[in-house]
Image (cartoon, rainbow, N blue to C red; front, side, top):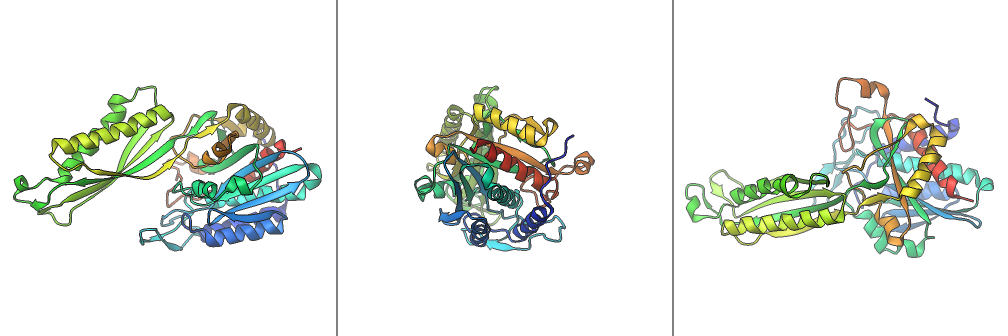
Length: 405
């Protein structure tokens, strides 16, 4: 397998130090204040013009004469996860969620790697300005985990304040083999919708259920019936996921509560399937409530993620570039993933193609071990530094550079 193009020792050491700092100092979605300040400092030192957008979002622009405008997005937020990696730079940070909850914070999805790789690619571009012309737009986006960040930047006039790229790129760390890159053509990541359902009944004594409308039983029927949407109403060749992952009701075992609350997460790759499933959810919830003689439940949208669609023509070109830079054995295609991302909103807002790829961070010996490989959002998720970072830096740099004059 060909070796990944080496970076200079000084740049590699600098990026490792930056990564360790970011990993040890994570910040929750839309609270990335210190992270944004550090990004501004690093990018300004490289000669990029920086500006804030969407609160804690940072845009860094390097104009280098006439030529194409190309963009790369790197997300910056962390997750409410208690780190258990055992790293000497593991996070011990705590943060506060919007509801006031005190939680541990960890870069459990690799966004610290994304920032570091973008800074690395930005450094190579700044150092090679004599070899290219055009404009590079780096979007350091907050709030990816909550689908708030891309929307906030767009609402704040991102593409009115910033040169509009002719193409947008993004990359994401995965638990695949370190040094490898994987792309999908067409649909790459699913649309996602999260809903909160408030089921209202009539409370009462546990010994007299005939005097109450039990929202626990009612909500339980809803949860079970919702599972039939995919298994019995969505065509087998279409992809959809309906998950109920939280359910809360009551305070004591002999009191029938007045309310129950549960949340639903929906994934889909086709807009028609998405609309069908969401309509089916509301139909089932309303029908079950009516069958129990209960008031109509309240359904509240928590967030929604757009489809990430890889432009086929640009994906083919990017695949050629990555193959040339990393070696054919390191680059492969993959089917669409049911995970979700808000990156797609950025190119979609200005009608330009986007391409999104994954790069692995797990060493071969871990993959070969007779144990599950820690994945994104796990408290044990910790990429090996190399060749992970070098692969991500080279991939971002080569793809951007290939579009510049």
